[in-house]
Length: 242
Image (cartoon, rainbow, N blue to C red):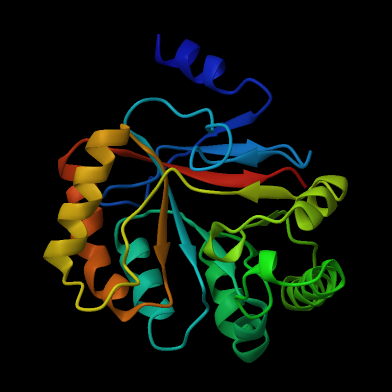
């Protein structure tokens, strides 16, 4: 029965089960991996179609890093729970912290682009948008040795120019299903955990937007991961065809 459900969930996707032999029995873990095709699709119900997830499944994504102060504790919290995530990195931050960016990938996490300096693409000329993308792509390739498979727009402000370009280059556009507003001031672990659970209850699962560039997120992540486990949520990791 479980096998048939997973097969059904992987229409147009390759689906890879995840084993976690080294994980503690009480760790949240990563239940499975979806391998997305490089076909320029767009996902996230805030703006696009849903990923092929089952009820109670979540995809953890982090924006704006890498940042020296907050990305390492995020990686530590994920490692302690044997959880894999996707990091949408800002080009300037990759250039400033290439070793930290590569440490993210070395931890088994997926990496993708989040523009060069986090400008709103809809407020730039088409030429400036394309230049921003090209420079970010060059930094990403220099950092990781391969082309970026995916892109998330800053502020989720998608522009027709880049949407067309990304599709033509078969780069996935990844929106979100829910966020936790961890960029707001004075966000404690209790506040962020409660907000995460409230919004997950309303949505049933999906792509979660967080920010590894925020100290509050790094501080709250251990508690949030334990809350996901306690409430029966399953983590799905995203990868892309080579």
